[in-house]
Length: 503
Image 1 (tube, rainbow, N blue to C red):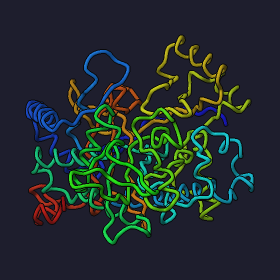
Image 2: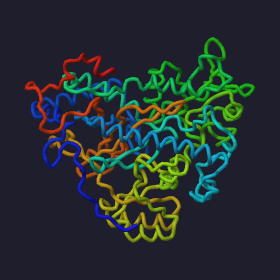
Image 3: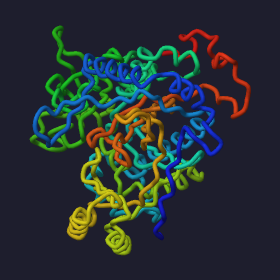
Image 4: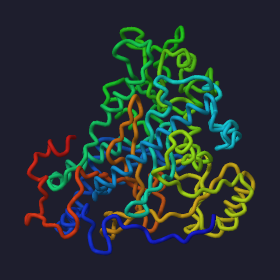
């Protein structure tokens, strides 16, 4: 691969001919709202999120690790046609990932065909031999997927990574929408916005749909959390409450005769489906780390006996490993006989001699990531790094090349964002959430993460990023130049808010 110059960032609000139609009402709103009024609303939002306890943990820093994720008041707008194209690509990708997982723990046809190097899969630390020969209920491995997407043009979306293990962030998507409806109800009279509020209900329906055949007519679902010290504990409790199920820790469950039970004040109750938010290694001390105090001894025995469903399946991490990521387009072709609708970012595997040589020579131009990293940790953005930082990563790559990949720096799209200096463009990504049970369901929108620092491309909350509400329009707005009623309202404004929003 040849080095590419980074093009200017795509501005999602502005085109050469003016404001893009999807943002027309937002542009009018911003023009008519004073900076003082926006500042007051921002402080109101902070108080709201603090009262709700919406925090995340930052590890490895002194002082109180609990922080509010900064919330930006200006929504990100995605047109109906844009979303429909993206959603088709997301569904295609998740179907291929599930087929890949079924294959590599089964017949391994893609490996035998030489489409993916066998050692890259079978020698990978996140590959779980205990899953070999076992097919989960309904054949689903990754029931909840969070596919990180960036936009580089009007019709250009690239997948940055596939989160197939325990993707987080959906609580922020839901709370962001609730906050916007409280803070700016008038904005919802000028837009028809696809609802997101049914996500917990659809998640519960998805989980019940993959319950084992041996379970009763109405499966009992629980959410398994590592506990209050986990960075996503708020989300665990939030989702359990919204679904109307119990949030449990490992000590609340036990296995008897290969059946999982929950301890209750009225005696043991059988559990049929576990939405687990615990990493594989800590899930079952009999099967994985013996010293784990977070999991449930015997859980994998009950799982393989067909008496409980786990979402997501253990071993699903092999599908989102960054060393496997470059081969996802080939999975689409191999399993679906289709061309990928979503593009990957060109990726260099530092374990390959030729790729490593290129990366070391061009490290100042590239983004370098840990193969098994997440959260923005262990990452180098070459164009924004010092010579000393580049030299440090050069030494790391030479010492352990298999632990790193590298990618060109993409010009992530920008959207208007409220910062200290006023309203300015900031780079964003998007994490849509895809539910897979007996059918695939995609929540319209997802979590938009925004890099609040000027020029920064790092959107992770652990690295100073914030979030936005993501509005997918129910209908595409009229093209620029089309007549708009003099009061600035669209025809949708004649409908009741409950009809339009559905949340």
